[in-house]
Length: 80
Image 1 (cartoon, helix red, strand yellow):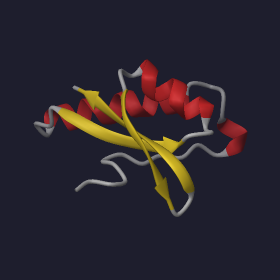
Image 2 (cartoon, helix red, strand yellow):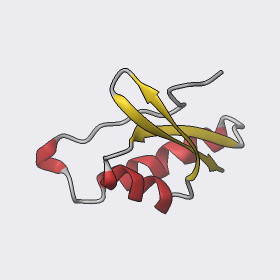
Image 3 (cartoon, one colour):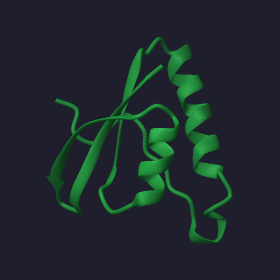
Image 4 (cartoon, one colour):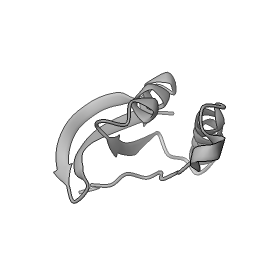
């Protein structure tokens, strides 16, 4: 079972709120498509509203919320 997702990313604090995560995730989804994947799982902490918004903007659909060692996380699938 895939628990933590296919994609991981981080944006340093001084570069946030510039659309970089949305841009990067879009490019990663393009690469996943070329690899033949039809969907990917992406996970973020439930209280990270910027990531939640960005994932939903890229088509993410909430699968469930699970406990992790870092607290509750949202598991979202993005169809590509």
